[in-house]
Image (cartoon, rainbow, N blue to C red; front, side):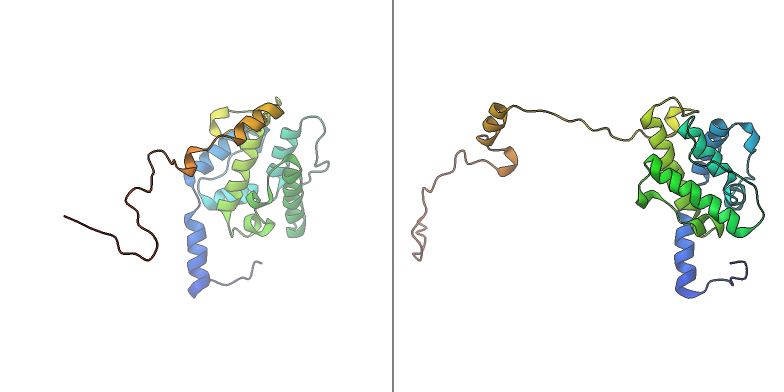
Length: 199
């Protein structure tokens, strides 16, 4: 982990593409939300990607964040500060498991090493955005901060139709099928015969 050398060739290109996805403005918004959600005791990171990574790297702030969204029955019972790498990574993975139970989809999740080694901090931002959107959408009173910081997720809008309405719908030709109004075979000739063009 710590003794990883610099990347060359394709690895470097891929890493630079991943690094370009990181959004400093989004970082500011996420920091504001985390401080509003967890309280000012979590402090603030130094501006920039490295500061953001170091702030979240031990998993303590992430654990406090997910616990604050759950309300009284907190998913992470034991949050402890540790300087050991595996303990910090375990804390991050506990956050990821709790976030998945909260409703964040697997595709929106980052891997533990993405944060711990700083490989994909844009993925970390994506996970936190998805978590914030879910918290705003749930509207269960546990979300703190400005609701305009995140998009609300679409809600299910189930409709019930009677059998009569469903039968009526089967007899209607949808406009995406096209129309046959005004169509006729006037001027068409039989198969295999040349068309008569007369001036």
